[in-house]
Length: 110
Image 1 (cartoon, one colour):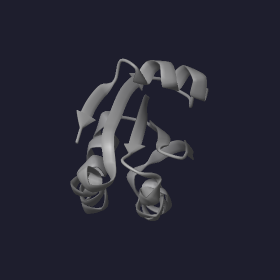
Image 2: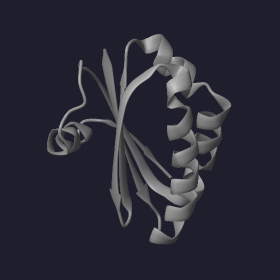
Image 3: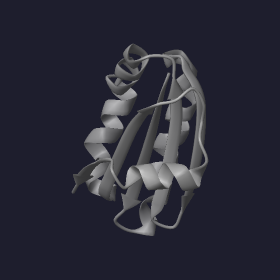
Image 4: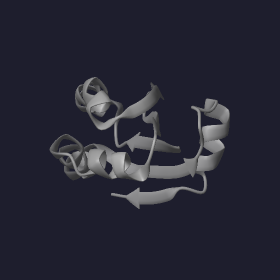
């Protein structure tokens, strides 16, 4: 199984509404892509997601979905940075551990 951890750092807290609107739509539909678990956390400009997946094919299918692609295209408008880390895991982990792992994640700067 795979765990995907993401940090989105907003350009300004005013973008929270846009982020939450998109995130809520994705959270409603994660089951369609066989997501096995999800956790979210955020405050002010830093917002995290953690999703658990059975296999990489399910992750790819979700990443290629129109809903996810739309959020990626819009990221440069609301975020300074997006940081992603994927690891093998059979469970959701504690946020403290996830944040440490993100330090070595792939970084996209806008």
